[in-house]
Amino acid sequence: MIPPRFPVSPQDIDRVVRSFYAAVRRHEVLGPVFARHVADWPAHEAKIARFWKKAILYQPGYDGNPMQAHLAAGDVKSTHFPIWLALFDETLRRSLPADAAAGWSALAHRIGAGLRMGVEDISERHRRPGPPILR
Image 1 (cartoon, one colour):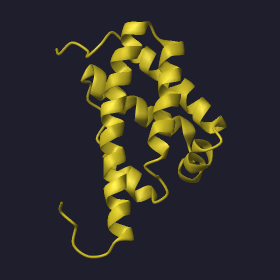
Image 2 (cartoon, helix red, strand yellow):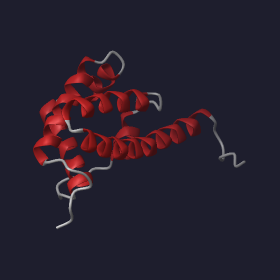
Image 3 (tube, helix red, strand yellow):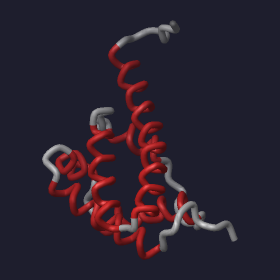
């Protein structure tokens, strides 16, 4: 068995995900975006908890494609990611010991940077038709 990336339990992950999405639903910018796409919050939270359990604890159970999901939504903007990460960091700080919160935050920021760049790349291609400009 591979040890977890940092000290969190499956129950910690479930608790953080529930707390985070409760904050998302109240958020003035993120709330409306998520509300347009999430009809079943418990199912969404369970899916995202499976994502984190795979990423942190190496548990099987998540087989989605986060990049594809964010691009398919159509209204996710690169400017949403810093807001998302700040809210996630706040949730981690309130929910976990400092070492676990820092480890999870670093992982979330790496994943968020990749998603943000993918969203920026796709939206840039839609604004400027033709081949990419290589500099």
